[in-house]
Amino acid sequence: MTIKHPAESANENIIPVCSPDCPDRVDAHYLLNGRHFCKLCKKVILKRDHHCFFTGNCIGNRNMRYFIMFCIYTSCTCLYSLVLGVAYLTVEYSISFENPLTFLTLLPLSTGHFFLGNISGLQFFLVLMLYVWLGIGLTCAGFCCQQVLLVARGQTWCQLRRGHLVEARTPWRVNLSDVFGTRWVLGFFLPVQTVEASPSDAHKHD
Image 1 (cartoon, rainbow, N blue to C red):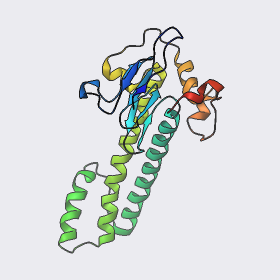
Image 2 (image 1 turned 90 degrees about the vertical axis):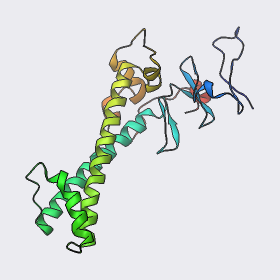
Image 3 (image 1 turned 120 degrees about the vertical axis):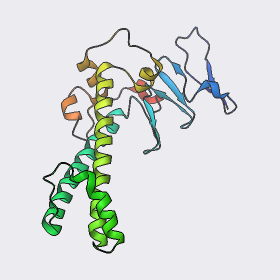
Image 4 (image 1 turned 30 degrees about the vertical axis):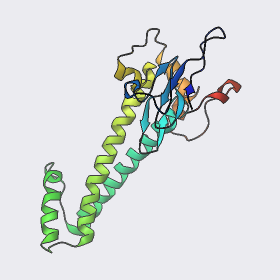
């Protein structure tokens, strides 16, 4: 079945976008009036930013704020867990983190001591989790900063990657309000509805 984009006006024909037999040169999405077709989701996304394999869904105009909030909460949780893990290892196992190079040598040394039987499995697991928390926290923080900057510019990662510049750039406050609502400052941190839904949004799939 061929999936089609809505026409720009009543006088235009509906443009076929993609079908299951479409060639690879069509790419994973096709841009038309700010809408993209995703082969993975098999649907049209308004202002598609990227396909998130972790959530198994495309990130677009309607769920961008939840993706950013997810990144904020995850990075803060990882930071909190990292602080608690460092404090626990310092108190229980007398590991000093005063030297900035400790993180560079802690995992290799702990791995060797674990296989030699010098440290317990719990201590090795906690050391390993420190690096997991650090890696996930930095990754989510980077995603969050990138997406907030793109939202403030009124641009998507899809447009940036293809070199599509925003010609009539709107103020950054308006762009943030479009995603987070009029009270966009609260929308950054509170998981509540701050964007008013209009009847015309019923046909949007994202």
